[in-house]
Length: 608
Image (cartoon, rainbow, N blue to C red; front, top):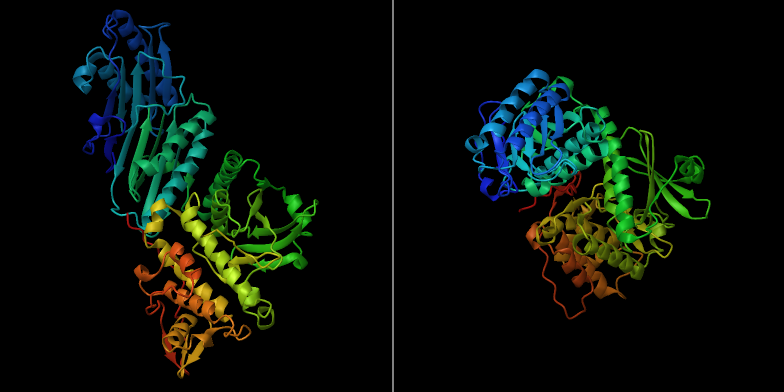
């Protein structure tokens, strides 16, 4: 057995940890059911005879197939029901011998061996390499995921850091991938491994169902166990298992607790990882559609054919190209009903793009707001074509306007105020008011799209992260809120954060430049020259003020998004706190090479 510590979940008496077993066949735990009713003692000759016959049948079946289920007797109170399961790499005679010993103890001496009360008619035993359940009640017609249940785990991380959450995602990815494989295999058994580079750990996973279970029941049983991981194991734990009599899921790090000669999937290999992601992708899409139908009614989310996408974009022609992103190209499309769409076609070899594609379709199903771009649907064609379909924004992205001297003149200050308000309302919804707490993590001018009336819509949720509801009370949104502060300065100034700006004979980045102007009482020099500053003096100064509060060096000093919205809408009588020195403050004398003084890569650490 690995270093896992075993706990019984649904049984109060077994909440204490079991010590790691020294031998492979040491019992991990047991569950005693209800004792027999008066007059129907488990020692009755008829029941005992049926139980012994059942035990022999289970051993023979497990020897041949790795698992067995059965029933002996036709009616209560003497009928006996049972299930036995050997780990997939522990088969044949060795499986049969191990089960035979466990069954002998359960049938003949359960009270002494396991502490179950006399006359008990329901006992479940869990060993490292096999498990079984015997009962006087018919439990075989259930979905396989019924109690009793056991879980084991090994605690490594103490706080749910961002690295711990990424580890959790990798665990979920691995066990979900091999669960999909196991459900479709005759032996209902699959194993795999992956690599967690941040901790230099190899992750191993194993899933299994009894062979009699149809694929859909096996899948449902395994999915049920996997969905219980977050509630069962604290974030970042390096080992864990959940078992029920007819299926099991387990993972460990750097511990080959099974024979690795024939791995079902090896996510060390990028090509195989991409293929496994594609398999999961189709399931994710179905889940998205079902969720929309259940919660939103006929939401309009669609699955498009590739031929539709090709036709709508004139064969993905250069004339229809709207822009080029890191993981794909965006085209303008026109559907037969006259609806204009934006078609984002991901690169065929981009694994990161694939992961972002999955993230976006899972997220967008739960997010609905006037300042978030609407995802109309998606298209998946084979292993290579992955397409997201959005509502079309006629005025494209904000960066194409505010950073262009001529086009920028079309955005007067009231229009820019409307854009700032829309972005802040969209972020407030993501952080606090949506069903999820979502941190965008890639907020920038190129991801702000403008409709025909110049209303802003936040787009591109490929890098977004979902956090617990308590995140709004933590520093996380304050840390990422720096992006909003930077974007606000760009909208006010019409200049990019990566440019160099001269002040007092030295060159600075935009954040530092704005801070120096503010300290000197010259904030108006920051405002885009095409706007002027006299007519809208108060609101311009307030927006510069709020932007500098959002980029302060200490996350504790930065306002949360609800505070930002209140500040932006406040009147002249409201006194705002004075901003402190911003983060990413850097300076180089004129004539020297300018270093990047605003690195917007953000590392998020969440306290529990």
